[in-house]
Amino acid sequence: MLLAVDTRDARQVERRIAQDHLSMFPDGDASFVSRAFGWVERYFRGEDPDYLAIDARYHDLEHTLQGALAFSSLLRGRAEAGAAPALSRGAFELGVIAILLHDTGYLKLRDDTEGTGAKYTATHVGRSCEFAERLLRAHGHTAEQVLGVQNMIRCTGMGAHVTAIPFQSEEERIAGFALGTADLLGQMAAPDYLEKLPVLYEEFFESARFNAGKGGAGMVFTSERDLMEKTPAFWSRYVRPKIEEDFLGLYRYLARPLPDGPNVYIEAIEANLGRLDRRLAMAT
Figure 1 (cartoon, helix red, strand yellow):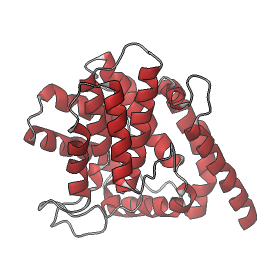
Figure 2 (cartoon, rainbow, N blue to C red):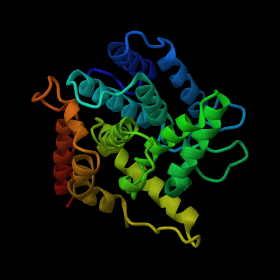
Figure 3 (cartoon, rainbow, N blue to C red):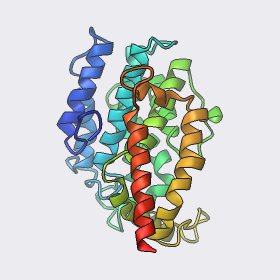
Figure 4 (cartoon, one colour):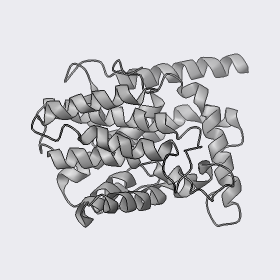
């Protein structure tokens, strides 16, 4: 658990984000957070007539909740620090919607019975953007709001060049960078991150098999152990530079107390990597 919230419990995460929302925007719509959670939970639990319940085992509802908690906590910290430009209520709310929808590209339609949603790993960002457009249009959002959510979701793409994303404003860009930061840190700081690495490998394997011969990227890991051995480098060579440079070091707003208190997310990730090193050493 991070920030004393159990991300296996959607209600706990929802309550914490609602508290952040109220703290930053006391005059805001008190029902917004529960409404947004209701949208994503309906789809992930298979309660919509058009979609199956999520069956990707790594990119599941808890993964989304981990990112959502980190995103809201980061932006609350940023607001408390008085950083400029201040994010409007609209930008924060679109960001919450974006983090909740950022992995809807793993969902399958009811007649899609081959394999799991993991087969869409290589295309899930684009699929998530398409899903977000359908959902938000149905709920009366404007074209500008839809594009804002899509731009934020695009920040989670592994190969995304953030300078090429057509942000419509500086606050949209900040919200997108906060979302990209939260997606990375939320999963890597999870208490069971090491235990879920074999599950992540299975998703990559299924995606590579599904996309074989279709011109996409092939399998980059030879085994579960290979993925585990490469995880420290993933942190040091990709994630750390990404959150520091591309995402403007926004992770610092997760420190408690601000500005120089411990950062529970960074500490948890470093602890996970330490456990991983010990586990790998014992297995040799």
